[in-house]
Image 1 (tube, helix red, strand yellow):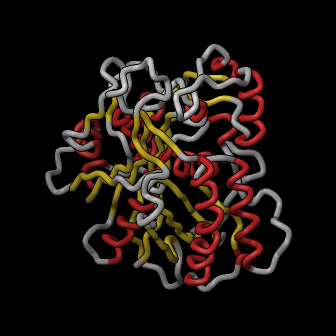
Image 2 (cartoon, helix red, strand yellow):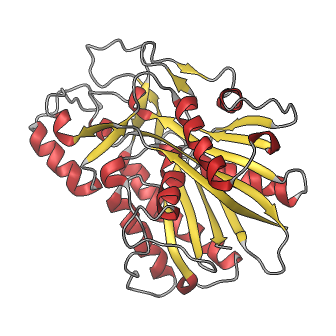
Length: 356
């Protein structure tokens, strides 16, 4: 019995926020001092490193469970699945529903319970719960769904990643330009196969001893702002170093556990955090196999126009690939590819998947 993705869906907000929209922001350092560089210089350097030129912010009337539901409906339609036949709904997020007016986290009831309600599902035995695992949360939810299927405890599971980081980011922190909003979903189903397909191997790790607070909540960098308000904060340099030192070896172990070689991997679908970081991770991964050159078009990127929407980056990326909306990026039957992510915790995970 193998876990196979039978449907995908995503929701990309319609509100486009360009880099030029930050020209009027008053940026401060972590020490509370105004950043001396001109905003144009800051933005140009930011674009050079991250490749982000624009990002999407959720429309005012929606929250994370809304856009997660939109993505879920597309995935259900893609798979041709009756929602009443779902055994589980797992929703990955980090900040719950954040209303535009209150800017407060709301996770009661859980986002999964809200999504189930919004889908109109009456089946009481469709269990619904949330996963909080930093940016790797959606991949971790897929890993959990795979365990249910392997154990014979479920046959059909809806897995969603939804986030609205724009409502938890500090407008006085340069890092606010990284963050965005979005949602992605898949239907994972049990399939009896003579040869392995679907989820072939997976791996997860958490490094919390020295690395737990690389991403954390904290007050605005602007000392004039209410210091009791909490915003998403990141030690970007530490995150970058951690990712480069740990992600490549972790992904290699997942590939090795799958019994394949790096040459068999057609795509690496990596968390869209920072283009420079993603390029460096991929280069180090191939170096672990004694290879200097990285194959062209192996790593699709959406960060340039969608930004970093945390748990949603990987499922949105996958949906766009499946729907053939990304140039030069296709997956065919028999292809191996990798899902991988790194983020708050610090957490890392990876899945090796074979297209049916």
